[in-house]
Image (cartoon, rainbow, N blue to C red; front, side, top):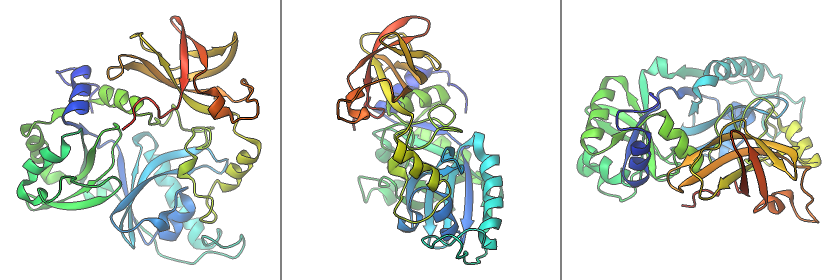
Length: 366
C-alpha cells in the first residue's frame, strides 16, 4: 500500500469519513488454524470459546512477561477452524511462535484451558495454513456509504439488509464464481468491511469498487484515521515491554476463562498498578502536528512521551496518543485515569505547546 495516491492524503481521508475509501491491506497476513480452539484459548488473551461461527473479535498474543507480541483479529470460521489477521511486521515472529507453542501445547507441556498447572493438555492435531497457501488478498472498504456501494457491486443479493455485515460478524458472498469472506472489522473508526478476496478476482473486485464510487486510499490517510479513532499501532502504543493494561486495553483480556500465556505477569501488574498508562492529547486551535517522540511535561517534570501524533482533519487540531508515568499525578482518593482527564500538560518538540489530556478513545465518538 502506498503512502498516498494522486488525490492526496487529505482527499483520501475525506473520502473515508464522508463516502467510501478502499485500502489494499494485504500486508496484514492471514493465518488459518484447524483444530486449534483449545490452543488459541490458551495462546490469546480474549475468550476464543465465546466466539460463535462467523464471529470475530480483537485480541492480543502475549510474551510471558505480559507485553504484546501482536494485536490481531481472531475469526471463528467454524467450530473447528479459526482465522487470525496479524500485523505484517510481526508475521514471521507470530508464525514461528504458533508453530513452537503448538508443539509444546500438544506435547502436554501446558495444561488444558481451565485446568490447574501440571495436569497436562489433550493431544490434538492442529493444522496451519497461511494466505500464501490459499492465495488471497485483503482489501478494507471503509466509510459511511460502504453498504450502499457494495450493494451495487453485488447487486440485489445484498439489498436484503441495510447493514451489510454487522460489526464483528463475518459473511461469505459469491463474486464472479469465487467466494469472498467479508468481515465487519476495520481500522478507521467508520462503518465498513474487510474482505478476503481470492487472487484470481482481486483486480476485478477492486476495479468494481472504484467504478461504484470508492476512492483509493493509502497508508498516510489510514494512519490519521486510526489515530482519530484512538486505535493503537503496534510498535507505537503496543509492543515489547508494553502490556494491554498499560495501553488501557484491559477489555481484551479475559481473566475468567482460565490459563493463558502471560496471565501471571498481568495479574501481578494488576496488583501493583501499571507504571504507565496510555492517554490521548489534544491541542485546540492548532494545526501544527504533534510528533512521535515529543516529550510530555507536567509542572516542568518529564512525565511521558508521545507515541503517535498528527493533525486531525476531522477536528481541525493537533491530536496525539502517548504514555504518562502514573506516579506524576496525585489522585486524592480517585483513580489515576479519572484524575488525569482534563489536566493540562506541556508537549515539547519542535515547539512547546499546552495540551489537554483526554481519553485515548475520546477523539471521535460514534
